[in-house]
Amino acid sequence: MSDSSFKPTRIVVVGAGAVGSTTAYTLLLRGQASEIVLVDVNRERAHGDALDMSQGLPFISRTRVWAGDYSDCKDADIIIVSAGVGQKSGETRQDLLRRNVRVIEQIVENITKYTTDAILLIATNPVDVLSYYAFKQSGWKASRVIGSGTLLDSARLRYLTGRHLQVDPRSVHAHIVGEHGDTELAIWSRTNIAGVPVELSDEDKQAIFHDVKDSAYQIIQAKGATYYAIALALDRICAAILRDESAVLNVSTLVDDYHGISDVYIGLPCIIDHEGIREIIDLKPTPEELAGLKHSASELRKRIDSVM
Image (cartoon, rainbow, N blue to C red; front, side, top):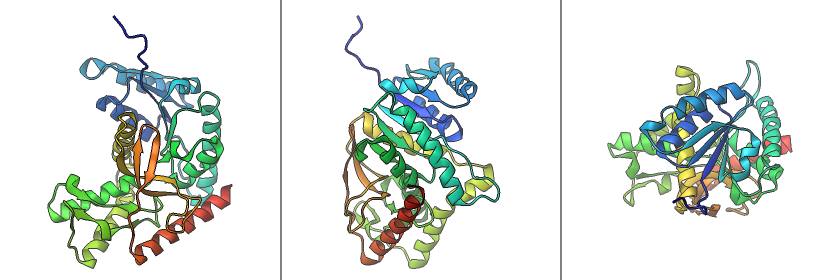
């Protein structure tokens, strides 16, 4: 006998490009939700992805997958936004930012017609500025508008540090903070293995951090886009929300007087539970690290001001 009080968990993925479709597939494999909906301007593409995934259901979890529209956001627990436009030849990052702001504006306007209760997870780049814009556009609490931030960058730092020290990266605790982009920085003062600070030369730190910042460029040059690792990062955020984990993840969130930084979305370690971001963790950065974080916030503020 079925339980009429049962409410399915639903994740809507807006944007069925490489990141969106890979994220939906990752969520499906991990069994994160009982319903996964793909929404895309190319409805045929979304339908094809949904059909392709659905035909593999006999091998995995019991999940409904379909191509829907914005009305499906009505009952969503999490809405992931990965839709956006790519950078054209000769186009500046600022030009790209302006075009993606218009995309996010339309998406958020459509989402908020049907729900004010979901958690909005932004993955479209430049993610920090667009997360701030989505927060303002939606009118939702900042705790429920989350950017993917520096979670992937932090994972890259953990992986590369673990590889250098021949330690499982899951045992490495390390943080990339600030912008998801050129002004991000590593908090080496808090990098540790089982609570023991890592012992690395300045040259090794510089080489590892360079590889972290260069990772996306290497992958894009090799195959055109990055999507596997970011899909896993988005899956991890969804798991923390749906399972009410109170997990600490480096995501982009609104800050209010974080060491003097306010009114920007920026990547920091946050406690995430079923209501979104519960709390920002204070890493107590060194003066040098704090200066780098403030510089990153200043650059983000300039970009926000350019489109608001």
